[in-house]
Amino acid sequence: MSYKVIVDSCGELTAEMKASGRFETASLGLEVGDCHIIDDESFNQAEFLKNVAECPTCPKSSCPSPETFMEGYHCDAEHVYAVTLSSELSGSYNSAVLGKNLYEEEYGEKDIYVFNSKSASVGQTLIGMKIAQCEERGMTFKEVVVAVEAYIEEQHTYFVLETLETLRKNGRLTGLKAIAATVLNIKPVMG
Image 1 (cartoon, rainbow, N blue to C red):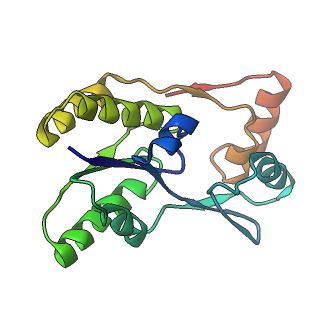
Image 2 (tube, rainbow, N blue to C red):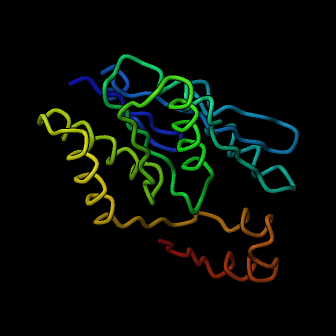
């Protein structure tokens, strides 16, 4: 059975995943001040972080458009899966679902499923790997969906903020609290 996995660009696809031809990235957009950046193969993370540190305003992101997902669904694969950044962090999940609806309106029904990773970054990568593992075992589309949804429920994502500056810039942390946390070298663990 042929399959394809679309992961928004917050996910970290390995070189092997990229080379397989079964994985595709749907790029997010990033804005730092007046600079608009597409999170694709040309993305320079070091330059981006430097620009974020120098910019007085908070960076913004935009999810891939529904049309981007719809184009990804339009392929020869019989089973298509999308893995998005947590719906609590981004509109990527809603965009992927809308893209599925648009695809079905234009081309008809197809086995497409959108996974809300409830995670980010490598969490999305692991979900993509789980989809591939299930598909390679010969599981049906519905069996893959059930197995991967169960896998997502078992995951726990934690992260540490290296700096609280972005939280200060977007108003989620007062300047005084950010300074105090920085002086005390407090690094919150979030999940």
